[in-house]
Image 1 (cartoon, rainbow, N blue to C red):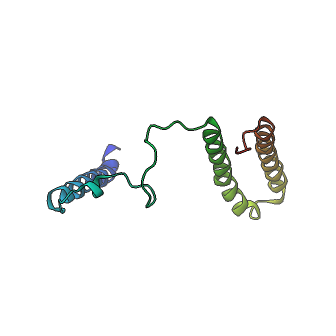
Image 2 (cartoon, rainbow, N blue to C red; image 1 turned 120 degrees about the vertical axis):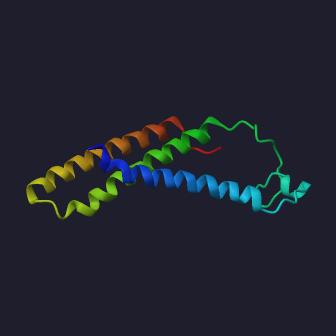
Length: 122
């Protein structure tokens, strides 16, 4: 039984070895001519105006978490939408009701966020 996992182990081992060899290859054979300009922080082509330790507003993180939640919603709804028309007629209505409940819960969360002022960017 365990012998059937040997090819997967070999491929995984090969991938790790390949990644390490490629990283070390660039260290050994890559050009090395550092200067002040190359070692400075790159920030979209502009000079950095603040340190990397600057604090961000909590609203920034709340919007980021909200984006992730609605992004995951798409991950769940896309396969459902693709397979919806191929469902038998009895399961189609059940699937539609479950998807509407899922969307309603997410909309309720969005309304709650809006009510708390998370989406107001000042």
